[in-house]
Image (cartoon, rainbow, N blue to C red; front, top):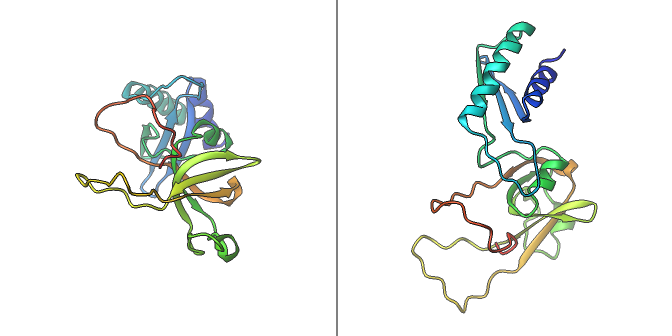
Length: 191
């Protein structure tokens, strides 16, 4: 059995979802896990979850004879990678960073303020027909302590449609709030 299949079977058997497997040249085997998605339920991976999976994987990989020098099991973190359709469904409405495989091109940029050679975007993820779109404002964030005039007109919203085939990398945008978790009060499209 292949290493990926062995790890995936072990992780899912323990009730977790396998997010990523990474091998480095130094013999590090990094396994990233998360809880399976359940709408309306917010669960987080903690150190005990990682330890539980680590112990089971050490046993399984020893039996399988897998070559690695160090095993690391972790949570996806605040900049979680988005891999497939189910991840995009799960994080619809969230702030994401996407990198396209190719620049948007001159034809797509015609009539918009977006540069034709641009590949990286940050905005709210939305479903758009058969594909996806990202919505954002080209407006620099206010500096800490800077007062923003109430008369200032916000930049217009921009949207870019894409399919999963066009994406080189997608991640949740790391947004840190040191005041604690609060319920979402404003939709993410008001970026």
